[in-house]
Image (cartoon, rainbow, N blue to C red; front, top):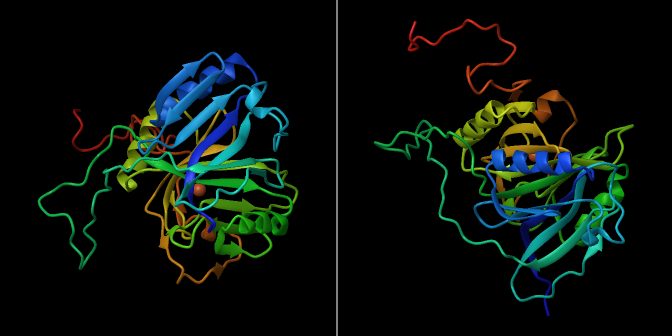
Length: 308
Ligand SMILES: [Fe+2]
């Protein structure tokens, strides 16, 4: 039998820090993030994106974690379940060099018909007699990627390449963007080795329809009181728009839209780490969901159309 094709992330399983407060706060965070809470018990939360990808949140004492050692202390990501397409053999469950457990299953994700708004760049008008949307909040379509801090990049890359992942781009010796199949989004996993930085979860990205939903979702999270880590902004590598928020169940969560779509013809590029490679532009501290301006800007400014 041939090896089955890993298509993307079906499920992420997090452990809380063990406290009831962290469990409750994580629940509220993902509700505000725009996921659908489909199951709730005293020791389990299960959320879905629009396409049926899942976020599962459990206390660290849950039987699901028996025998596994977390990547880091406190609340963090414990498992990634990859969706697999085709009839080929499923890879066996395994643990990466950081302690993150990987499972594989026939993908449970369902097709969705949502689409981002077409753009009207010069010379390629795709939106006619139709305004582009303004979102009141985001409803993420799918889970995009996972980013880990590693202390041994070469070993980590070897592990993921062993599962069939291919290199999309890299910071040699410092970071590797990997996609799970030759054709697809720019990266499903990004591994980052920062001198002196311990291994662990950096962030998880949720794909939304377009840049407008990145803004709408970020503003809604801001209004709900969640703290921006960085964003909105745009990554030159992958071309994606981003907005990162702090997440009570570990690392950051990112709204992400408009990433590059690669095929087997893509040639990996090499970059030198630096601020202009991480972000073409970014707003530090986010945008206030009420004033629609940077929070550090002094109050008093009004838009011309506001009542005076
Ligand atoms: Fe990301």
